[in-house]
Image (cartoon, rainbow, N blue to C red; front, side, top):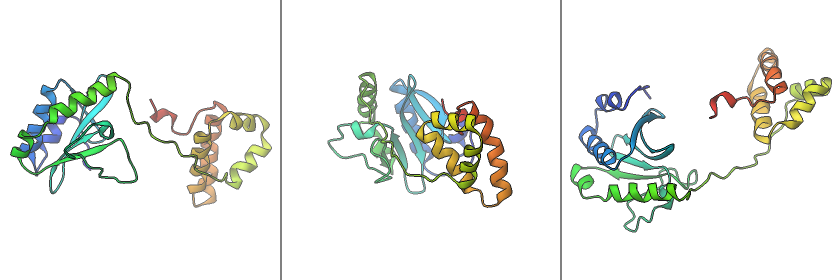
Length: 198
């Protein structure tokens, strides 16, 4: 997917469904949402909350409601494009401008905003996946009591990230380089991916 820096750049680069997504954009903007770019495409927010995104695919133009699973959707416009992976995010597909003009899109946006205002959200389920601590990491933890104490204070998800980071390396040299990289982070009781988290 090509990286874009603005919604205009995204829309200008479209070959398929350009008129349809521009019409969707105008409906969303008129509903009072703020336009931004997230995950390589236009995303529309209310305050800090992601309400809806737009995407153009080969066979249709689509909207993604981030908390679509909470919307009433009595006429069943919304569908789960990732069955089994997500409960909250639902998609609405369009294949013509007429379809868009006749759809109650603004009503869905306003309902979604109301849900956010009232603190109603589907929260992701955290799975406690089992993981194995690689021998290389166990050896260092056994040899360094201070590091071991810091390890014990890390959350389960941080421990999993570190364990998987070492286990993914194929060569012993790479494992060693990764161990050297993570030791200071573990001593600071930071997760491997903390810098990417807000």
